[in-house]
Image (tube, rainbow, N blue to C red; front, side, top):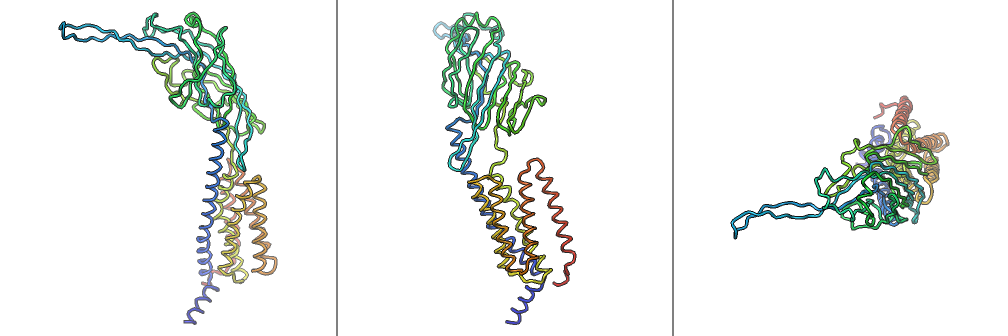
Length: 448
């Protein structure tokens, strides 16, 4: 029994295959704490999302805004033929129902100045904004003739102006819509959908007013977060947006004009132009105003890669870091004939896993670069000192220190890249594989 045990022990110490199997098994075991780290990142990121949503709700959520819409009620007369059993004859009954007509602007021009700022709660941060919006345009000549509605059935004295928005809470100034010489104050209406309605008081002399095209204008100051979008309800809609935010994501059904779009570290500016032919709805509706939010366009004000996203992307390379580091130790063991116990491999692997917990915890209280540097230096120092104790001398510990430092530096570069991360990562992995192939060419693989 002791001979068999001794023979197995010698095989474990001297066989290259046995040592590779042990290191491979330990690498798979180390995936368990690495998965716990990934779960921790997900949990902290979810907590951040909850806090950011709470901050945005109190400040003002995303903003979707339409231009002004003319709303005019009217009466519909329908005739119904009924049978009278007493007189044994038919008679005609006239039914009256009330409906609404909606007319969109002939021309709509939107100018928005968006000022962003960070809001903090505890260790979490959200980006919110205050938008100063100036809207002007022209209302069309309003004509009911296509619907064959009698003039006496149109309630011109009940005509009003509507605005639709997704964020009443964020409005900081009472909008006044100016038509000709009239200034119409707006009040909120009961919301039955995603968009809330703001309605003006009645328009004086509406019939005479809309007998020709009339210019309008109004200004609005509104708090919001995440995105700012507009509905292109004008027969010709133009929009301009300028902001101090450096990472916009142009979103919605229409993109800005490429020639007028500018993005820099100091902010961005963009222009849109949408024609009636570009969208799938008419300039007037009779009966019910549909939900047009699918046609909205605008900008998302996003944080390109936050600290948890960077930590998550870094953790995805955890298997690579641990695997390559253990492979370096294995190659050193094969070249130097120094025996490294499986327990020592486990300690090295756990030290590498600790890098990610340090990174997450420090990045919550500092910027990612500082957190990454501190975590990398701490783990690098620990692994180098530990390798010095088990490998003796300075040659191999310095090799491990240099390899691990290069690997952490390479991963940091990949994390910072957005468009070229895959390309740089693929080239880097190819070069690492080439180095390992060259380093292992002189090993005697016949010792099984």
